[in-house]
Image (cartoon, rainbow, N blue to C red; front, side, top):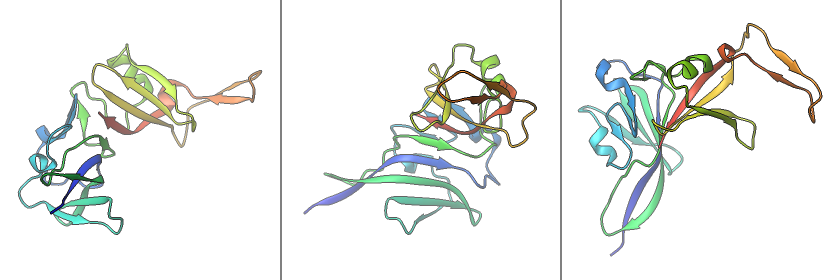
Length: 176
């Protein structure tokens, strides 16, 4: 007899955090609130969490107080028993913060002030991220809708606009 296991590939936290104690909203190395990378997602559930499968069979949603709290992207694997292991956590809720106060809505300037060794870069598809290696977190950035000012850089392969650090805001955080 085959038993199917679902391994959590990505955990998306967000949309509603009403009723969650402040101490459960801390982002640490390998952890977002009660969810911990490498552990069963059951360990991060709270009493009363409503776990549902979405239309896409690779997505599990967790509701609290009738509102979507987090979305899990899963990969189906065959094991000897059923296991749900968190692999990556993606945080979109601005109530979650690192112990230094960085979270969704923080600016690149905020990150550089708190984590001076953090490295910034762009993905092949042009998304900007700052990697805080000591936390094993990636802060994904986007230019603010109403930037204070921008600098036009001429003479590159194509002209580009660079935003000041305060105009780049964290839109999500990936915890590995």
